[in-house]
Image (cartoon, rainbow, N blue to C red; front, side, top):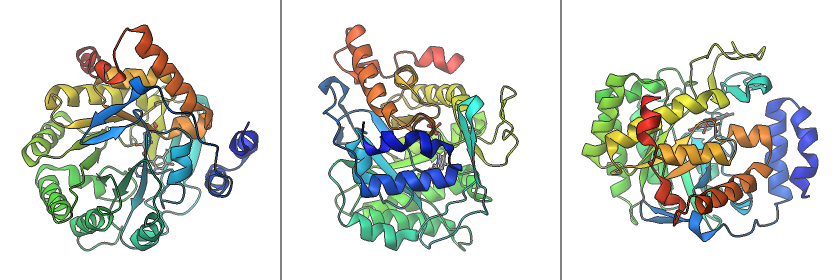
Length: 352
Ligand SMILES: Cc1cc2nc3c(=O)[nH]c(=O)nc-3n(C[C@H](O)[C@H](O)[C@H](O)COP(=O)(O)O)c2cc1C
């Protein structure tokens, strides 16, 4: 048992934002022992990168790039830090993070609290080995939000293996409007321009909300293909509140993540797979908590998967459990690799 596992029950009893801070500090000052190497059949080659396994840490856990090394040591195949904005900002007033334990879910309305580009860039000058993504956003008070994204891409391209532009946080007023056709096309064009000014050329990902309607989705898919975006992360948290929620916190404003997000985000992922036909890499995110849910994302169309809430509620043991379960499932299906399962059930999921 390592230090993180030892303190897990205590951390779970703290108020959630305090628990998160304690976890970051624990990881920083008592880094976990290195996990054993993943089964070679879990390796995935996509967007010009070789991921040792398809399981990544989603943005939001390590907003300020404090612990990418320890998270990679836990066994994640890649780690995405951020969302970072050009200037530091405090985010929304507390409380702004709620555990919906009965529902296997979390609601957050952080509002891009982060220390800004300069601090994170300084940390990443000594970046760990392993695949690192940097997720960028816009300051709440930015006069030109698109310029914030372009600056983020430019700032972090020399340090990251890939970049994500996050246009889907529900907690910065008006941010998700950047997913509308004309604004989205302008944003993607500027971000790609900024990316192309830097060498080596880094893959650019876009992260979308699960709450888009058919029309908005069709526009986004068309723009991704026309502009040549490398990857799509499906999805961020949802503003929907399914009737099944039981927790007393269910009506808190913000983005809902975890188990109730699994089905809608996986359905959307499958639709993206069918529309984009493998021309844009897909990262499935939303409600992954065990090997079955990770495999379902892959079979629905994901090249890679990410999680946050499953880790927050289940602890660090979920990482090894998912990787072991995935390796077992690949072997049981007689597949040569986990990548051979990508999209095998996209049609079923898209209709579901
Ligand atoms: C507390 C919390 C903070 C988050 N912060 C960010 C963020 O800063 N940027 C971002 O792109 N996504 C953020 N997310 C969304 C996650 O990256 C992920 O897309 C979403 O939670 C669905 O995955 P999950 O069900 O595995 O948590 C956050 C999620 C949570 C729970």
